[in-house]
Length: 452
Image 1: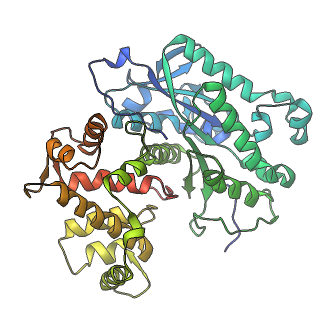
Image 2 (image 1 turned 90 degrees about the horizontal axis):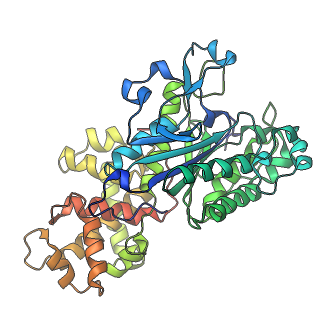
């Protein structure tokens, strides 16, 4: 593979009841890292709603909760790129995307980021001697500063911490010895944040840069020192990728070819908005718990077996169908090939299949992705049809409970409510499949990559 260059679950359980947003705890996300978390976005290039903020998305700054908006004054080194007012990072798009997804909640952001800092400055067991290995002993303990800010935010208002986002690593790509320790230090940081916030399964999302030609999955690479200003880049991004396997409730968010300022490593306005949306999408795709159970546990209760129940004959059929759409025989479907130039089903159906199959959002569907989606879809439909007692294509709560697949009536009601995403008390196949598919994929190492 080409050398890699330099350049992060629990969703709230169903929200019900008559509480107003102001009476509920804020759903708070912790954001931390270095300069691309600090942000080089230009406030004057934002739409008014993002630039001015509102009461549905808050940030904790200057000792109080206030509407989320750019507030950090542009520095001299930023002004030469045309920034004359305020700057921002991924928090703006991220916060507003979460607010859209949770219209009945108020989202809160607690951010602490310092440009150019090594992960050594974020260590829970920080020492000046250790930080001085990279000449940053004078920075002090950023972990202590982060925890202090979180505690101040907690005292100012009732909060529920629901996620931890991390954009950092460039500083450690310059030092091979420190980069070799990156994964251990990252695990220590996440563990300490979870322990000190009292949220042992706090979702962790870690940003990791890629170029166009770089694969998402770099599990098999053996890091090597490379030339240039970032000789240790491969150790850092390998650690960021491996974090999702080494840290429970963690997901690596691929930041591929994010737009930067000219001749600069810092994300510009479009880039920062892009990064925020990628993190929001990643978080919303991670697993939610229903009645204390993960989606995979719920699907198992409903009778899902996944690949374990698929025969070789079925797999052969799936491969043959995949081949029908592979006009150029390259072993993959492009959007144009499958959706625009497809030769079977309606265009709307082909588009739905393509979007559901493209699990890593790279605009290409591999044979493995297609087969995976077919297994999920066919099994889900079969279970739906078995529960649909009167065969009218609609699944009511009574039919769902009467199927006997979930013994606990209260849990059955919670699962049905989660499947019934529009809350109209009636499940139809498209709605049911959307939620089922999201649950089925949430436990896998599917990554969020290229922006839509």
